[in-house]
Length: 311
Ligand code: 3HC
Image (cartoon, protein in one colour):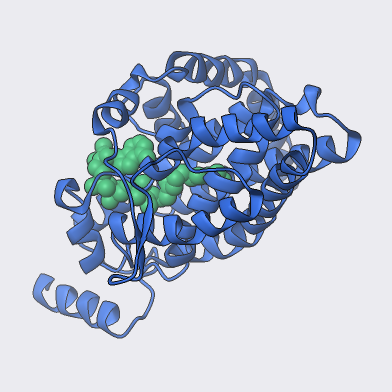
């Protein structure tokens, strides 16, 4: 009965055993995983768009190859995550419908424009850097398929972060104009990157429960702080400054103090009023419609093969 099932679920959590698709799980645990994993998948797919803008404009073949590989990786991350989500009993088309109709969220960060090549460096360095901070703990998430998908994603994410940082390093060692481009990109991407971690813990409706269920291993504020502490020294090596006059080392806490985050901007972007929200969703819907013939052909082919093997 349900009491025993709940006890077994809690025992597994306490014993750090993974919850697998066929295991009993509380409805709310299933619901919050579907919510988080599907939005994570949407973020990966929409996340291809800002960088896609620079594939034909990369300054060298080497940069183009690295950018192509990164965008392809994001597509793969999206597919792992939609597959992990389907193990919870949802249909991929329904998830995509939620994205296209605006009922599902995706990461706020992808609603900002990529104005110069330096943005490709800032995205790899900061956005993938933030994603790594958030995704490494997810490798220890209590839900098996999600945790296992994250192991592969994190390996590829560290390549993304390194190639981004290297772009920034080349620019900062380049001409004064190139260094100014890098500084301009840091100015535009810093605050949206630290907003990626979500609202402050006090304003986060899901964090406490997600920590109890060992979906989250750290809170939004803890991960944000880890990211800031790790990134500030990297900006010092680049010789460019983080656009926060209140950012300063706090000897007592052993962390960087930092300025107030503009939560009005965050919620405006999350609610669909960021610089590129409409364009991003329109592009995704168009890609989905243009790809309908591929899906139909694949299904028709699979049908034919099934009939052939049944004959
Ligand atoms: N963008 C959009 N919505 C956000 C957000 C953000 N940066 N941060 C929080 N939200 C939303 C939440 O989804 C939630 O809304 P919902 O109830 O409708 O889903 C609401 O704001 C309250 O936030 P909470 O912090 O209470 O919600 P969560 O516990 O779900 O925490 C999260 C938010 C930290 C983003 C968590 O969902 C998470 O860790 N998700 C998985 C990782 C992820 O999505 N990473 C970012 C994008 S992936 C990426 O960067 C790809 C890389 O390759 C570049």
